[in-house]
Image (cartoon, rainbow, N blue to C red; front, side, top):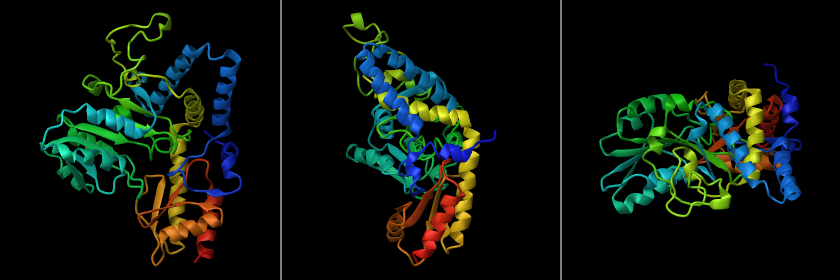
Length: 370
């Protein structure tokens, strides 16, 4: 399809007065997203929240859209406040024993290090390995493999198909955090089949912070209890005139992990973003994002920077020989160019709302700040 990308860019007011190349830190909100949240607040006032059960029907519609986006089923989707909430539910479902191991990649995002390392007091060992040595580190002691689909520092995209295949037939849970991928690059849940996929939506999904979701495979739902039980845990919770009193009977969908009220305003905002992504098409978005990232790598080389050789990701990380990446990122900010520095690397992250002029402005500012 032919997309009017300048018109799409105009939907994001924050881009007007600056060169924003930092979606890996925070995605920007479109006017559509803000308008959707505003409509919800206005609707609350109009009806004094008397139709609140209808909000949940709207959110079920969002489940279906998210499932289409990742090639899953609506029954797989549960809403979360953030991605590490999904990891917490998964980790609490495992009967940990001394000598068990959790495997992750070297240089992982702290979520996937802190929570597993916290189990060391119970004799559970966190094993960190680079790719592809991670595959060789899988052993009879491994109970959980927890990885980010894309590394937040380097942009390395994990070959999840290989990892999933290596775990086939073994009683090892696979947790994937796709926060630094989904919304820019496609994810196929039906193919990878992780036990739990979690996404924080304030980055590439271009939603407000405070909302995320997870997709839980049916095999995992059958053996993973909710971490919290609340009034929405019983299967008939919509019968608010006569709420069930007693032990709840859970549904077999991922909704059972929610338990209570949902952040409706944020979910309406997320839905507006998902609608736009589905309208543009995940493949169209991916092609644009990866094209802009490729052009960014080429342009950075003209300044003497050394981009890392990962060409299937929206995150461009580059070494700056003889320069401090943090100092450079601060200098660029003063020029209205927003990027990041992570562990000595300059990190540039382009989304579909960026364009070639953003890249040119980055390069001009880099050259003038030497």
